[in-house]
Image (cartoon, rainbow, N blue to C red; front, side):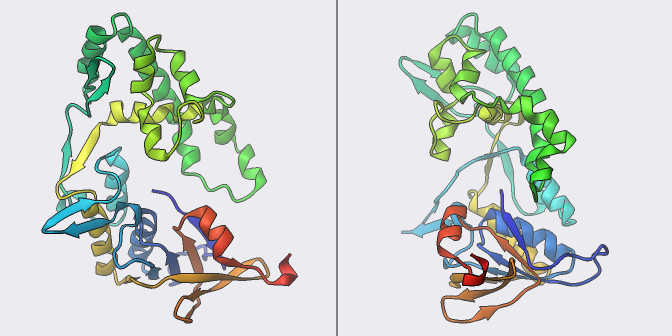
Amino acid sequence: MCFSIYKNCEFGSEQACRKKIAIIGAGPGGLAVAMQLTEQGHDVHIYEKAAEIGGRTSLLKQDGFSFDLGPTALNMPNVLTALFADCNRNIQDYIKLISLDPLYSLYIDDIVFSPSPHQDKTKRAIAQLFPGEEEHYDRFMRDNAKKMIYLLPIWQEPFTSLWSVFRLRTLRALPSLTLGNHLIDELAKYFEDKRLRLAFSFETKFLGMSPWQTPGAFSVIPFSEHYFGVFHIIGGINRLTYAMSEIIQENGGNIHLNQCVQQINIASKNITSLTLENGETVEADYFFLNADYAYAMSHLFFLPKSTY
């Protein structure tokens, strides 16, 4: 879950000052922000253009059946557990996670590769299907564990200026970014069999990307699946976003559905307000954007001539 933040004013050093927060989009990122800010006591309002929450993880109900419109499984549940814990909630009170074993089954040419969250089982499967590659799998997991340690902090770091790039933790992570290498090149360092390289890169298709064009740093995605596992939520991924909305409303937050933001208004390089499709103007102390970045920049931002 990710989001962009646009500030109109600075939070005080003490969080006791209650602020009004406007969030565009009730996808997982917007809901996560709202959970944390309502827990801190702020007046939070989410504006969602659709009739349902969830964004790319929303739910379709038809003929008595329910369908997830986006992903059907997740990994790294520790991130969600920490989010709920930050809001003084136990995630197990809201959703039930089931660990999948095997993670999935990949049909490549004449083989079926079914990796497991237990690395010893995956190693045996690789030894059977791709003799000699099992030791390379161990090396892949070791190297990417180190890469994950360096990359996670900078993924969670706000880059608010050019100088942010020169922080020590950012500089230490640079080698792990494997700049200039694509994912398929990274995998070629470990696996000789091209089918195995495909088995460790198919996840990029979910991002709409090709392993021949995806940055090499994305090798941590297959690593995280093999290390943390893949999980199913009973009732579907949509149960997660509904659980998040429950906490927001328990904390006094507001989710406004069928409220499309038509324009983001700016003056003196600060966001001043939002204009909704119905003509209503929304003012707030802070504004968060959880919409598609490219669409928002080209369609939502209104810059007065004096700022050009």
